[in-house]
Image (cartoon, chains in turn red, green):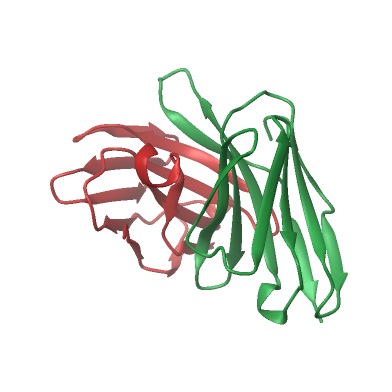
Length: 114
Length: 115
């Protein structure tokens, strides 16, 4: 069974600070996704990481993937209030087991304060 | 939302009643999924479909059934709703983006409360 663990689950940080969210997963996979969810809203795709060493950046967010360590990170640079949301990592289970369904971590609730 | 419509968006029902949630997509995607989201659990897969009349179980399928008689519609049915099925239900479709990756795109969600 593919397990996905995120930490921390809750994060309160000041504006202007940097921080990293970690995502570990239990079985071999080279496709990892990061989603953002605002309160009461749906999930929005942020990043798709397709191979070992992949790095993607969008604004103040940067995601990376180390398939050998089964680890992805989401780094936040100089946080601003608009980044407050819940961030999920998800791993592709592959077509064989579950039709490309994603296994999700529990999410990291990020609150950026002045 | 990539042409995904979920209905109803909100529903309150009583224990023991049947409930059907509908997911409608306009993009002709082959794969469709039902997830539930609960605090502290993230999203968990209930059922998925890989074509018309082709469905399979996910991690938390007990108490749920699905049907897909047309490409565009994927129905989730709770035959006899229980309070433990109070949740937010998300439908998703699988599409290929410009990078070549398969990405799940989610609907707006259906909030179900079972009293």
